[in-house]
Length: 485
Image 1 (cartoon, rainbow, N blue to C red):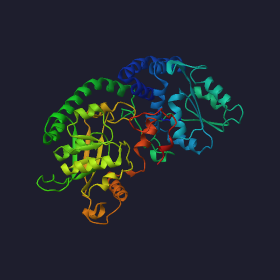
Image 2: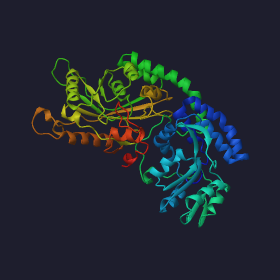
Image 3: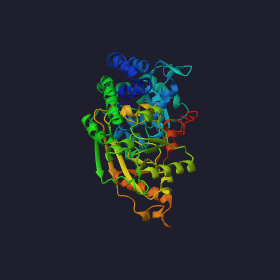
Image 4: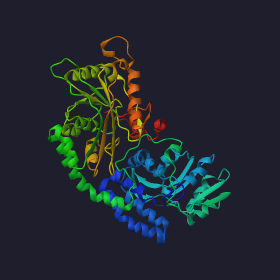
């Protein structure tokens, strides 16, 4: 795995991801403090002893289900960004593929099988007691040196030994000698990783709070920044919640939040006229989309949402209305809100971090012909402001904890009446599904994104093992069928 299939030879970043996502900042700090001791053992005494220290510092006391959840939803994004191109060229050309790794099997198996097409994964097995990891490993211990060779012999006891063996260090020689041909992968961190479009299955959905792979140095910076960043986030949220909306744009800029506005937004509706309000149809990147839309317009725009935590609802500077998921009830409520003025909606129903747009619900297209597509995009340098597995109440805090987050709001041309479903109150027009698909394509083209037919349920089944509704079902740890495109 490390140094052969992946360019990097260190597994610390992936242990650090598990430590932070499951155990938080304190577990990450414990792992960071243990890493020098693990490094000394690994490089000067025993590879096995060094890995045992990392396993204990990371896993001790964790629920195995939480580890499996991170392995399924978080790690594939980071593993896929570090694939060695030459190893992948050979590995992907083979008919049957087996990976031997000193890493705990529970960390790597989902990625290797679901994304790289591995048929067999042989890794270190962790000890479990009553559903929690003890921090120790099962016999025969960490899979290095002779243990790798013995595991390979056992796995292929009833069949022919592999044709090709790939490794990157001396301790790999013992298992490589069992293969008909063997090759060493020279250390070269300067080689470019495999581009994501060459993977058998694209990564559309992923979870986790950290934007970048945490090396020991970046992990230290993250630990030191979180207390400062949390105070800064509280200040930014207070400014957005308490100041009048025309001043929020300037307050955000003063506090390091960059808001870039493109296009020409429509003027606010006249109170004296009977004209219906404009429905802003936004792509969905974070729950803050309607707030930054309001910031760009300089006036508060109410928003309808599928799900919002009580905390986020309390600190929101704009009116938020929950959708009931009953089509007739939601349609009546949206019509009522449009009579009162402008309204924002994100018809994807959930966020997506990658350059893809999920399927647009067509309900909004049936209710008004005053439609303005809005392309939303953002950039974060440390933390993601969305989660499928964690507490959504922390989403705005994590977004504003970034040193200088960026939001881009692009107002596209208002839909001509002949392209709407209502068709200006006259007969004819397009179907609501045609309108929804047209707006999805228009926004995708402006952002250079790709349209998909994935839905909210697809995302939550892939990342959280449920359908994203309030009643959480028993996790399905093998829900990977929706990860194709």
